[in-house]
Amino acid sequence: MHSIICKGCGNLFPSRYASKLYCTLKCYQRSDEFLRRRRIHGENKQRAARIKAGLDPNVEPSIVCLNCGTVKAVKASEVRDRKYCGARCYREYMANRFDRFIANPESLALPQCYDEYLTGDELTCLIEGCGWSGKALSMHMNMSHGIPKKKFKEMAGFNASTGVIPTAYSERLSQAKIDQGWSAEHMKHLRSLVKNRKFHRDGTQRLEGKEHLRKSQALSRAERNIRTVCEGCQTVFLTGEMHKKFCTIECRTQYYSEVQKKQRQANKRHILTCSTCQKTFLGDDEQQNRVNQNLAVACSYYCRQKRAGHIARGTWTGK
Image (cartoon, rainbow, N blue to C red; front, side, top):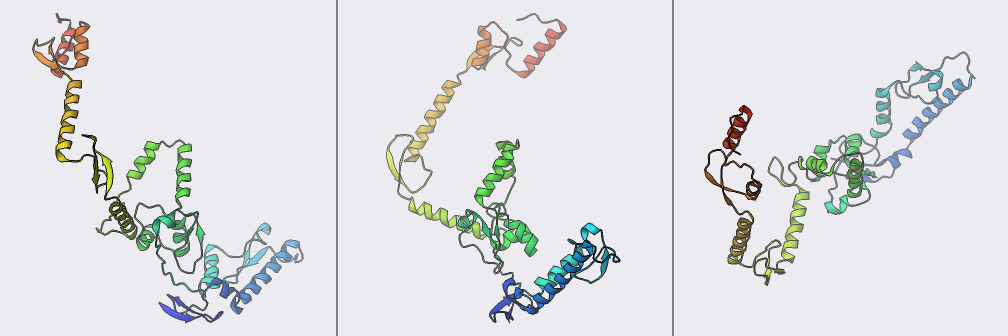
């Protein structure tokens, strides 16, 4: 990182490159270099207007590229709007006109509170000196600063599963998907496919995960003396655990034994006779209802298939 004195305002600014001359775009716009390039742009625009108005009838419709200076024949409808030979000249011209002179420190100002940062109406760019604000920060970082989304999340400390967009905008996008016919179960399944929510492949925990851990610990410490009602004996007791349901282990054991006893009573078995092998077995309520309706029951899948085979061949003599 280099420390350079701005030619416009005289302030000291940091930059990754020693060839920078101005700290911001505002300082560069007041410079002589910018005014000189602006005059060239104005002359080219006036020439295009003369050609389009027909004041130079002997001159074919053409433009002078602002970057390389070559004359390129174009359609008459493109004379006024087109200013470059192609996309490469456009990129080079913009880089030479702006980026070659303006500071590019690319130092990241990490969010101090990730939850507060993501719940705002708009997100501000974390690159110092950028000043951009909008909805899709990841796209801005990729398009304007050349930092891919995955790399940007790692540098800024966001979890891999965090969408770097305002929460209200995220809900609006989700609702739009639902309106288009996406089911809530499908969207929940897609979100569940995102792994490494807190810890990542290298085993480290990012800054957002650490912040959430500190908040959870603070809540846990504040709720250590919680008054709750035991689900077993219905007595009120104090606990330091948020999800504790029983006052003692004995109370919990007795509660679950009673629950299992009720389940066994609900699933009461009946002694029935198999219509194929004539053996007795324990059947459920549905099979008992079939017996009450004078219908056949089977003790196993094998007996049921055997009975179906006899019926198909016409050799069945039972029910």
